[in-house]
Image (cartoon, rainbow, N blue to C red):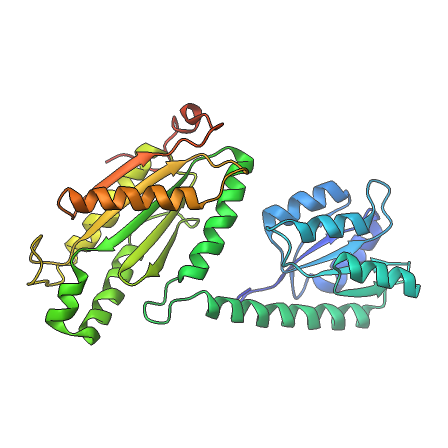
Length: 322
C-alpha cells in the first residue's frame, strides 16, 4: 500500500446487513470488497490481495477460525492482517482467534468509533510494514528490485502458475565484459553503467506483471508470467537490443564498442512438486551458452518439468510478434 493510495479492505460476513453497516462506516476512506460466502471470500483474498480482512467467525458454510488458518497458510494471503468481527467475545474465543492468526477483535454489536479506530491503526501498521519490506527488497544502487525482491516474486509467480497451468518465463541477463569496463573506467563509472543498464532494461515495454531485478553484480533477471516460449524469445531480444541501442561506450570490449548484454532464457509450466530453482538453473545454462557463442546474443530453451505438458501452454502468445 503506497502512502498516496486508498487502503483496500475485504469484508467477509454472511449477514448482508453487517456488510452494509461496515461499508457505510469505511467506504469514504478505503476501497472495499465484500463476500457473504466464505469460499468466495477466500478467492477474493487471493485475487485482490487486500491490505486488511474483516472476518466473521460464525458462518453457516465455514468456520471463521478455519478460514483464518487457511488464509495464514497460503503464501499469497499469509501477510494480510485479519480482524474478527464477532459476537463471540469470551476470553477463550479471543484466545482461539488470536491463535488462528487474527490480529484483533471487534465485538458485535458494532460500535462505529471502535471500528474506525481499530481499522485505522491496523491499516497504518500495514502501511509501515509494506514500506519497510519495500526498502528491504530494493537495490540501493539501481532502484529496482534486488535479489530478495526477485526471489519472493518468482516464488509467488511459480506457485500461481502451478495452480493455473500457465507458462512462466525467466531471463538471466549479464553485462558483457563488465570487469574490463570497471578496470578501464573505474568503479564509480561502473556504478553509473549498472544504473543505466537497469534503466534501459526496465524501459522495455512490458506488462504490469513482469519484473526486472538486479540479481547481483552485473547480472539482472526478468520474470515474465503467462509468457510462452515464442513470446519469450521476442521479449529477450527486446531486452538485449534496448541495452545495445543505448550506445554506452565500452572501448575495452572485444564484442562491441558499446555496452552489450548476453541473455539466457527459459520457459516452463511449473508444478508444485518442483522448486523455481530449476528455472533459474536452466536460464543460467542458457546464459553460459550465449557467452560461449560470442556474447551479445540470446539463447533460450523450453524446460519440461514432468508431469508438465508444454504443448497447450505454448500455443498462445502473450506478446505480439515483430
